[in-house]
Structures are given as C-alpha cells and as structure tokens.
Length: 297
Image 1 (cartoon, rainbow, N blue to C red):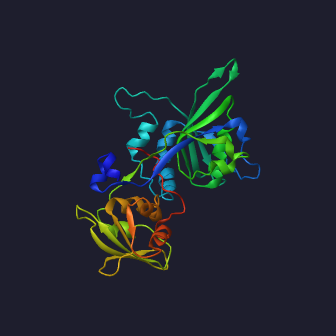
Image 2 (spheres, one colour):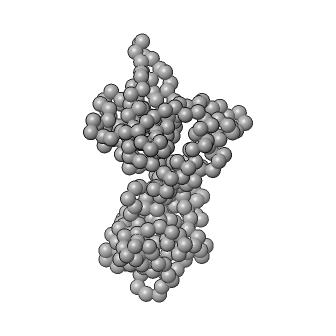
Image 3 (cartoon, rainbow, N blue to C red):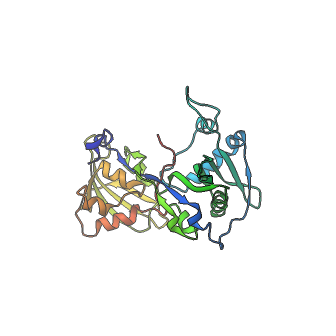
C-alpha cells in the first residue's frame, strides 16, 4: 500500500490530509453574491504588525480544522522577510487585515500581483500566499477585496482546504477551477492508540471494535472504541468480536477524518468482519470540515 511508493508507509505512516489549489476567473465569477455579509474594516498591515497579531489569529483558526499544525515564531519571521535562509529571495506581499465591529482582528490575506499585460490589455494574476480567517464575515470581506483589485484577471490560490467555500460565495461558482496535481501533505503514525483516539470527538453512542496490525508493536491488538453522550471516547484493549480489521497505516489515514473506512475496504486495505462496520466507522471518524494542513514540511 502506501509503503510501496515511499518510505513512510513501511513504518506505519499514512497520508491524513490532502491539499490542492484553485484558480478564479475574476470576470467570469461575477464577484461575490450580493446577499453576503462582508462587514468589518480592511487595512494594509506592515510586516512587524503581522508578526505581532498573526500567531494568535492563526492559532485560533487552526483549532477549527483537523490537520492544521501550529506555526512557531520563526515561521512568522520567515513569512514576513525577517528570517530568510541563505540565498533565499523574498518578495514582500501585500497584507490586508480584517477587523470586526469591535476592532478585533478576524482575518488576514497576503498576496502578490504580477502586473502582466497582454496586447496592451491588463492580464494580471494575483497569487494568494496566505489567507486566515476566524469568521465567515472576515473571509467574505477579504475575498471581496481580492476580486476587486484593479487589472487582475485571475486569482490563484496554490493551496486551499479541499472544502474551501469560495465557489459557493460567487455569483458563478464555475469560475473556480482546480489547479493540477493535488497531493497529500500531512502523514500520521499512531504510537499510543488510546491517547490518539481519545484526543478527538465523535458522534455519540457508537461502538466499534478494531483489530489493528502493527509489526512495530505500538498499536497492535484489538481495541474497543466507545463514544459517550458528549462526543468523548473511551478506548480499551478488548478480546471480544472484531468489527473491522486494518493495519496501523490505514487507521492513521482514518484518524483525522480524511479517509473513509468503506473506501479502504473497497481497496483491500481494511476488512469488514461485522456487516455495516465500515459504514459505522465512516460515521465515527467523519469531521465537519475536511482535514487540511496549510503548512507543508
């Protein structure tokens, strides 16, 4: 399976998030739908300001998205041109900050514009290098600005969540086209099964017995996952009947909700031992938002 095309899979790792970008034909999009709330204020921010408020803003946003990892201070210094690698070039982006009615920072967008003209006609591409928002209003206001930048004919977002809502915000969603070559990003390896599975929430009142094969021995065995009324989980070793059999890598792929047990069964990467177990696992591990890791490694 995953290990046959690379080193990670041999050690129980599996891709847990997907990433890919899209391009927007600004003219064809018609802009945002007129009924949307884009309240708040936008203003340009200097690099030192971004380093000051960016970490807290991103930390709040990432907590609503499985797979998003924290950004250490050095990451913000590098993003704002203060800590470049030897020989690394940096083009200062335009950074706009959104504040709500109470003056709180709720979003930021960083972008560059290439300024291209074709046959004496503006034909510029705007490239979004970062977009962080903690409210729907902030995201909409930032996109309203991006779609209104002079001379821009297309917007490219090299990386975005698989379920980014932008197409549904536009007058014509067909103006959004996926960029080629989507790929996996974050790979996981579970080492402590009770700790990993109880660190997330689930639909209440469900039960699933898993037989996990792990040659390294970290999570090998039969485990019973039971969820409580509040969405919490209890995970214990078990000797009873097994519902679903899979290996450590397949379970890692399920953990954040980015894969489906029924798909793994169809691919021969899991075995359903109790009728309906794969569908129950799909329900258990599904997340409201698709997992996404906006920071690559």
